[in-house]
Image (cartoon, rainbow, N blue to C red; front, side, top):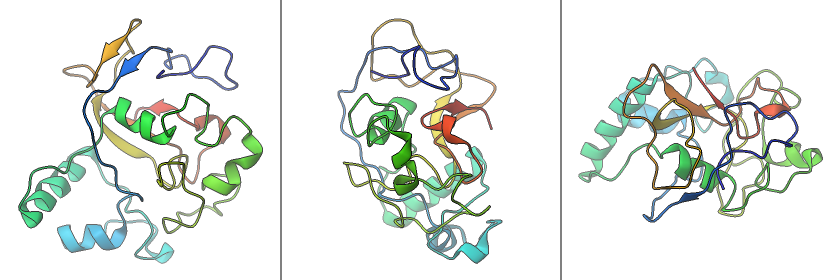
Length: 193
């Protein structure tokens, strides 16, 4: 199930619960793209939080910047498989295939063990892999920096869908995840940049 039940605490109205079937395999990097990785591919480091270290996530980068990074990464690796995940793929990976509000269940007291957010981040980003991973071995899925999705932002369908990729066009791409400056309610929220 993608989205959130109406009785979830701090649920946002655009999180309409609906059945999604993913039929194609995909890979996710275990951490967010680091400043070091960005430098190796792009030759510069646009990060505001350079003092957080080269293993901290790169930020702030636009969706178009990320597309250029992916293009150059694919050229460098001489393959064409790297891409942003769809919103449905990301949510499945974030929840480790489960349906709870968080990858670890619904107990918000455990969030400090898994995420950097306003309560524990000390107003900065942190190197990836310092918190616990989810059951799929992915780090910082609930915090540190927000993450771009491939999809355009739009309403969720009200019925079951297979391998959704979002609307064909739109005014903005989707961000997912919380960030170092986000509050508890952004556990799986979708937002505009």
